[in-house]
Image 1 (cartoon, rainbow, N blue to C red):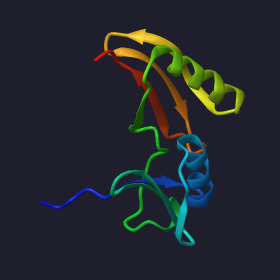
Image 2 (image 1 turned 180 degrees about the horizontal axis):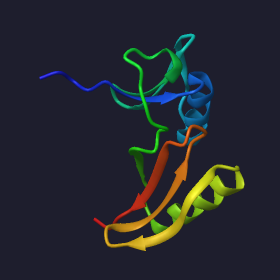
Image 3 (image 1 turned 45 degrees about the vertical axis):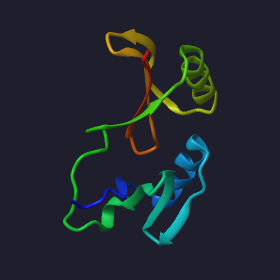
Length: 122
């Protein structure tokens, strides 16, 4: 079986997206080529960004077809992340809410990709 090594987000500016996520996740971006950048998010796993105008075959859509999900350790941590992101000007799509699967909020990156933060009791 092939080993997963990265997930790619199609974006307008790969390097701007890498900087956004590097700040959000506390990672260091690596710039591989002019239209592609990535950051490490786990051992042997990278979040990558590719300029949508050069992808072959071409892609459609605006980035809201899926979500990057992040875990909070406590409900208080989730609420603090929401407040910090809101203060930083990150687009908040859904304020913190308790849903059947846990406490969550949803934000969007500059390209409209959804980022969900979730706290779920073990």
